[in-house]
Length: 257
Image 1: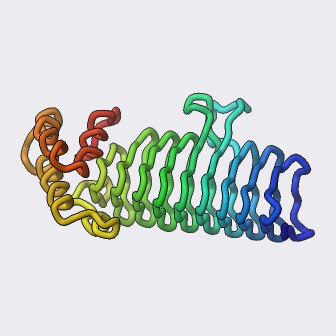
Image 2: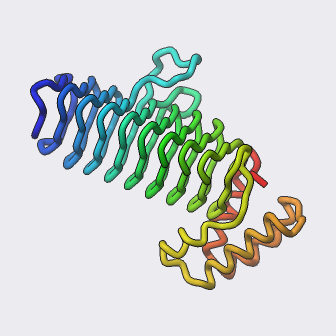
């Protein structure tokens, strides 16, 4: 274990033997940090927080602090962070609240650039990229492989589906189905993230089917219920379309159209 003598570590913290902690960082009570994780200088981690393996926290990040919610009055809540995440300068991640299930959760292999804010009760999947200044309000759900451009703002209780892409400065107040690209204030859709599908080695036929699903949903003039009816046979033939249909069926806030 490499802990700078100027760091402050609560005796109850559970820290793996090979964790590195930089100068002037503060690790509070009820914090667990897994093997291979590197904590830079001037990082504050407050518990209850569970951090997995091989994460890296850069200077001045604030992790696991109480939620910015006036309804919160000290109830038990926690933050869970998986493995392989990169969390850059001035990132703030808050714990959950009673109203949101009591947990904020970050998955694996996410890349959070500087000045990101992740509010209480957010659920983040795996392999996402948040560019500088993106902010999530409370109770937001972000699925795998989502990319948020710089200074993207996401309204509370919004869901963003797998592989979706938000352009720089997007303001998102409704759900975004999987693979869909949006931009603007307010954000509006402008196609599918075909480049992301290619990078994840989806076939040309699969990408073509996703494009057809997008046209059905956004360019056919169908109501949402009519579009879902047309998507069902397409999803049966092409499994890549099924996540779009599943997302539409569970969306409560309404999708961005």
